[in-house]
Image (tube, rainbow, N blue to C red; front, side, top):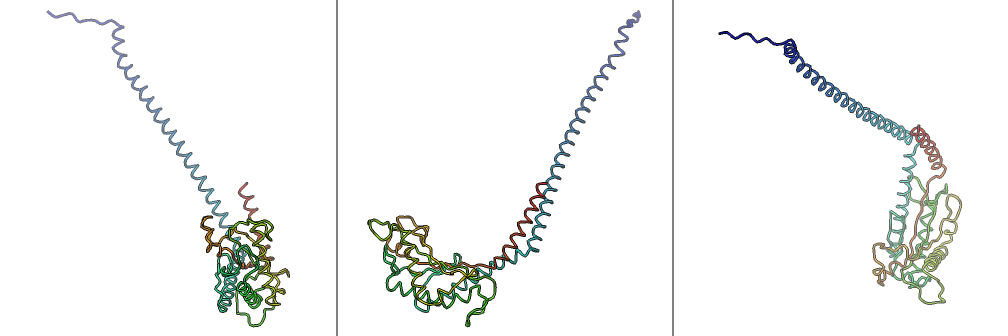
Length: 302
């Protein structure tokens, strides 16, 4: 009635005992592998974070070092009085504007309407009837205009030279800077020379001749002109010619510049004022600044 109990062999009993153990070991190994992988990822992430941190810290240190160098350089500019020299250059520019305004006012009182360019420091004489086309000799009206310009220069300019003693009657003028040079500039239109045997080969000859002619008239207008000297004791007034390379309106096309009215405007004389400040003071400041820049460059290269 009752079945006889089934007896397992020893091998089978062993198999039954180690089967769950084997499954457990597989699970443990799997967990171990997962943990190793996770730890590896954590270590890699930590290394990346450290690298990024170190890179960021390095850049911050470099910026801080640059900031300190700039701050040190700024202090040097202040201590070397560079800003004071720059201020004197600004003063010199303002004095030039003052001279231009006085010349303009003086000529306007003689019914000569001149144009002033403060940025370039020039006065442009009226072009109409100043010179005939392809000629260096001014018209009668042009000669009168140039003579009046010479008289104005003789009266006003001596007040702004480097001479220690100023002529009586000069306006009160503070600030730095003095006249270093005055250039009488000749300009032409863009018309080409077509005839052979003419006095001038090209517009360069013509513009220079116009400047020289204007200079001669200015010199003859007042005996004081020849005595005007700069800080080096050299002649203050000179000449220059630019042919047709500096038109009044440089935005016009060549075809537009061939218009008779435009050409008349381009045939002109301009007076350019050049200012200067004490060259000894400027050179000393620049020499000191150069030494400091070399020092900073050496620190950066270390």
